[in-house]
Picture 1 (tube, rainbow over the protein chains, first blue to last red):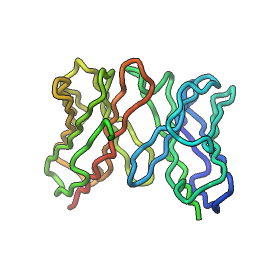
Picture 2 (tube, rainbow over the protein chains, first blue to last red; picture 1 turned 30 degrees about the vertical axis):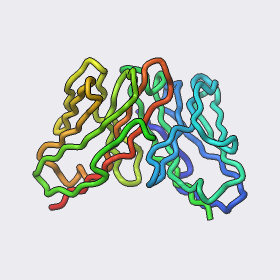
Picture 3 (cartoon, helix red, strand yellow; picture 1 turned 180 degrees about the horizontal axis):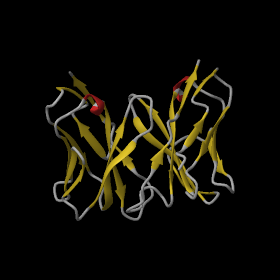
Picture 4 (cartoon, each protein chain N blue to C red; picture 1 turned 60 degrees about the vertical axis):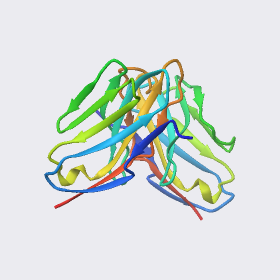
Amino acid sequence: KAGVTQTPRYLIKTRGQQVTLSCSPISGHRSVSWYQQTPGQGLQFLFEYFSETQRNKGNFPGRFSGRQFSNSRSEMNVSTLELGDSALYLCASSLEYMGQLNTEAFFGQGTRLTVV
Amino acid sequence: KNQVEQSPQSLIILEGKNCTLQCNYTVSPFSNLRWYKQDTGRGPVSLTIMTFSENTKSNGRYTATLDADTKQSSLHITASQLSDSASYICVVSPLNDYKLSFGAGTTVTVRA
């Protein structure tokens, strides 16, 4: 059974550019959650998609957006990149929302974004 | 203020020794508490999931405990191995809310 696949693994962008990250969940999983991880802040929740609908959103500016396709694959977009956006971006795949009791969540290896 | 505080921030232990990581939370009411292990450069992997009614849950050499009254959880690693070197993250799910609360993690380094 294939795991969660995130692409690309590494990315270097300059300030002001935009970037799109991709996450392919485990087959059959309908929930995809996105997280930003930085050394000082730990894991910060970005948003969660379930069956193509955004169900929940964290406290990030509107420059961060996402979507989910009918095959459950999800993309995250960051526009007008800032230096502070440099981080590891992780997605998690689960059958239902990952916080739900008895719902196992599986993380991808992440995309390391560096903004210069 | 973060609703999940982990301590220590980091620790170094010798191979074969035991260690205990702490997680204090203020999330209330809560549905479940999870511990994840994250190796460097990889995504987190679930170790244990406990509901508010469970006191302990084991996964091999990892044992998590939960005291819902004091809102404290601990993760005990027995007979540590070099492969236990990783960051350990405590995650609390509130009841009737989608917003998970993540601890900043404890970095464990196991030395030979």
